[in-house]
Length: 504
Image 1 (spheres, rainbow, N blue to C red):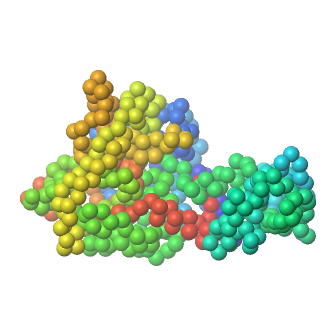
Image 2 (cartoon, rainbow, N blue to C red):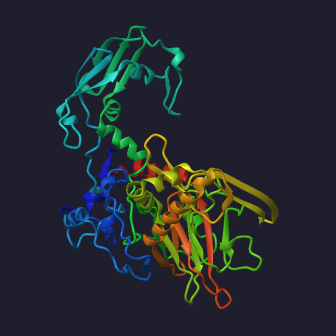
């Protein structure tokens, strides 16, 4: 089955809104977060900073009340106008299968001819092989790459997707003696100077073209483009029963979570461990020193502020883990009925990019100053008492060493009092950290879960907090489970291949 293209911006266009298909619509998203990726928007990164109040969301409806919003920049306004007024900005990919196109498919690739020279095999493609509107006629494949990726049974084990040969098993000077196109143009045969013969299907070669389009398809399988957002954001809603019973609904849930960093699951059973039903569809839960799951409720002598009714500042969970828990499932079993107990949510990537472009000195301090996060104590897991001492050293904002993009944000009151910096940098660092936290609050949304709802959050990106409540007059009972991103991403890719869907 060929890949079918799913582009959120394409699906939101007026030409698609009347398509005969089954759609699950999510409320419009602020123009502030329509940008496709973090790096692309770097020259126009603006925040609304006229007030520190958060946006409040009542989860009984999809309506958002914004307090004193600042109008978005003109380039965002123009972008928003390009979308039909009655067309949502986000459509979750829970769609009829016939809606997708085969624009990125290589299944119809046909080789017209092939030749050798200049260290490369040049392949000329038939016109029907052009993808995505590109009229590409030829491409080249370097000799070492072809020899290293020979698909014959002596060189490659197709069952385990593993090379049998190592680089020492073939000479780097081995060159094609002859290339032949199979009948119908469906494969290419390469006869090497060593006498070895390699055969490559046209589909296989076409998928691995050395151009931007082919590379972008593979990169999207690795990771989807992140959509950054601010205080006008509305969380997409996903039905618990649909997620656990329908592959397309599960893919839509995982896609929204990966792109936006937070989703809301509705109509979940009001019982502990219900999150396991979703987690086990994607992989398996991550065990911590709290166990596979743990209740969050007020208790006397609590070993963590989470188990009190006090306010919690903007934080991510367990930043003292090197391999931090990737995804949080926060399941509301019983919500406190009085004032308080709301959750504040902010996009750490969005705020980090704002600091990068508007406060570069503070951004540099937060990306280059190592901070000790730690936790120490005794916990009881499955009837056994365990001592733990967790310690990790990392900046507040972590960049990818190759791309420079923000890949992890760490923020918690569980910062150690040890600071591994010179005294003259301490005050500037605190000023930068204060700016970071103030901006998080300015760009946060506020949500109070209903009993039976579940917040699912990217713990490497999303910062969350809690308002205080009076636990002496009422109960607030949450159940929490963690899932690793490796598991969720794996499941998303499996579903993409199974359903034949290309995501960007």
